[in-house]
Image (cartoon, rainbow, N blue to C red; front, side):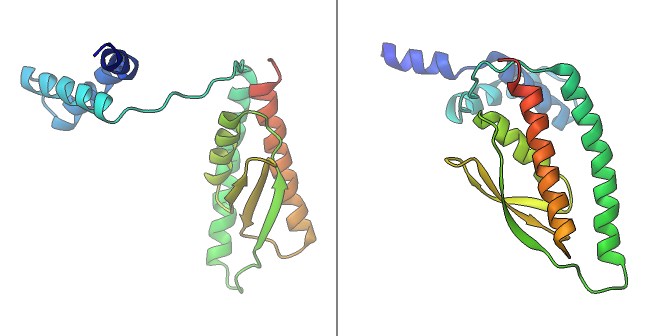
Length: 173
C-alpha cells in the first residue's frame, strides 16, 4: 500500500492539474463552480492515469541571451525559408532535385538533441528523417539540392545549428 501511495505522490503534479483545469474552463467558455470542479477532477484523472515521464535534466545551464538571439534569428530564417519554399512550389520550372544527407550533430545531451531536431524540422525546406543517437548523426531530407553548393550550404546550416545549441545549452556546464 505504501508503494502505491509513493507512486501516486510521484505522479501527481499540482501545477499541471491547475493548468488543465484552467484550460477546461476556457474550453467550456463559462466560469462556473461546476466547470472548475470538473476541470480539477479531469486534471487529477489525467495526471494519475496518463503520467508524463520526467524530463531528463543533466545540469545544463541555459545561456539566456544566446537563446533569445537564437529565437529571433530562427523566426527570421522561418520567414526566409517559407518564401523560398513558396517560390519553389509556384515557379514555372521543374521541381528542384532533393537529397538525403547524413550529417553529424554532436550535441552531448539528448534533450538538446531533441530541441535541435525540433528547431530544424519546423523550418521549411528540410527535415530530419532519422536520428542515430549512438553516433550523434542525423539523416536529413533536403528539398533544394540542385548542386554541390546547395548541399554544402545545408551542411553548413546544420553545423551552425549544432554550434548554436552547444553555445546555448552546453557551454556553461
